Length: 276
Figure 1: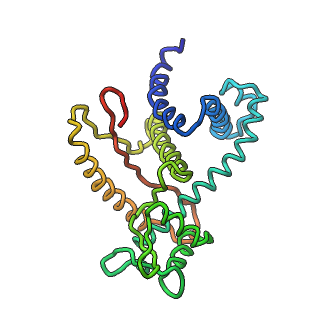
Figure 2: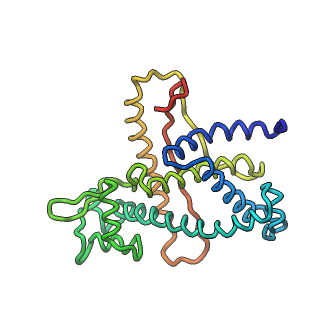
Figure 3: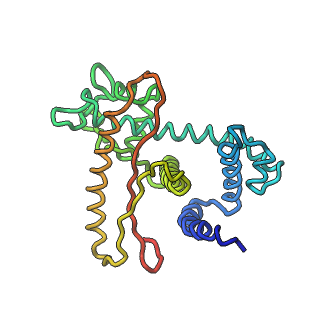
């Protein structure tokens, strides 16, 4: 039996693992595959973050922390390097689409006199979709990015063949590869904030995290609350985006930079425990 001090973390794990298990089962991931993934991540975190006196964590200490054999630790470390490369590549794909849409809504060259995204011809002189992609997505092919933005509903094609942004944020199609990758990043951001707040030194500032909820709302009010969330949360995120863009370091600027932002999510659960 777990000791009393560990009981809250066990209860917390049982709670957050339920939606994770539901998602994985719907995606065809078995318990065995999840266990293998967990083992790899445990080894990676122990290796990267639990060294003593600034030194890298050795195999013996990783084995002690994780409860694995040293042979399993070595095998996991080899696969972790490949997985990290794939994860960085997937995050880059998401970031390129998001940066292009943000630039389309904020860059003076690509908005009209009312501050709305201008329809952009695919290529040519001046403000074009190709120019927008070059500015905000580097060497990513404009045709490939246009295809993904069209499929996701973030961009439409006008009668004259120009592109027009109809959403400010890139949201991949439900359950496609990039949508799943995005969900992983969202969960990582939320849990990173929670873990930091729980383990930070008392003198360190906390990171904002909060919820607004009520357990006695009649179900007929769900559509109204959903519309309220869409309006108010989207407005808040757009104001965050404008603030972050105005404080972004100039291209090529020297000195460190950091990833900074905020996330918002809706809570919905039947009191019976059945998700809707």
